[in-house]
Length: 363
Image (cartoon, rainbow, N blue to C red; front, side, top):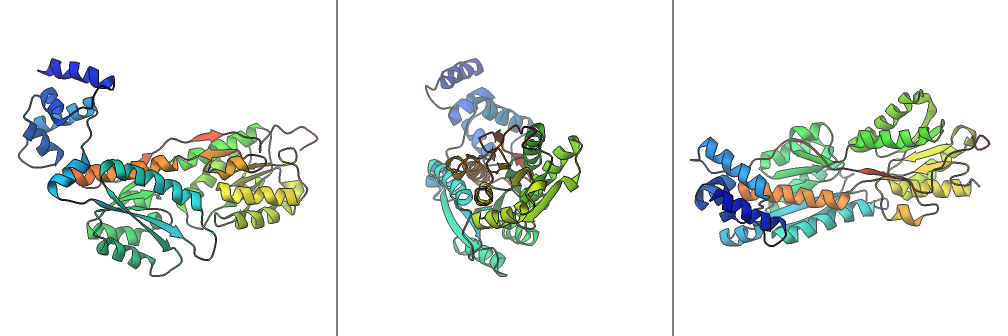
């Protein structure tokens, strides 16, 4: 029977059909009801049998049909996606919209209801509002974005509420409460630094993000690590702190370029600020990349349409939103507890026209 199941999976691998719960049962050599008990994390299953079933699930790539299960059990899985916004400034719209697009697409395929809320991050009662929304909407799970994903008091409240969590770009403390989902920000910052030092740049301006934004701070730490490998210390970098908006990138860029002889590369913690820094350089009469290199972070659509197009780090935001929903749907449908720790989504460096190999005259 097992050999037949494996042969059947050979057809599945050719996209003829998807594996079913019966295929899992056949490969594991157990009854269909036993597979169901394992997937629902129910008791009265011997450890060796449970291990065999889970091995068959992994081998076949079987995925629970959450939509069918919800309909059969008359259970609605609701996942809240919490966006943070500073209502006094323009939003970092692509970060939010890309996460939401990935989440809603995954939710539609899994039969999961996604409820989106935008919360003012500067409101002292923001945490209370989030918890109230989760209660009122009867949410089973929640996806938190920065800075909420970095705020332990809120994470403790949600954990006590019994709502499953995913923290997008959460810091080290978030990993103690839930799954923190994001890229390796340290390595990404290091890649930007290695790229620029490899091109011969030695004097940097760095526009940081919001104070306390863990992933953005980690990018800066990685950047400094790359400079250290090139024999440069922190004194090679002048910093300003923005808030991820175009306007803050323009203002910080103008401040850093006031002493133009000390800066031959501007590094920005996101693309919106990098676009503002580009404008600052243009206003200063500098040619990019001949006079100064500029880099961003996230690989948002704006990074390709500004002139010159930005060298940046591609952060797969839509994939992150989808993965968060898939993880929560799997956990909730199987009745499993949250896992804690960090899951890394791969990123890559995108080199465009805003960086260059400087000539001796350009230095």
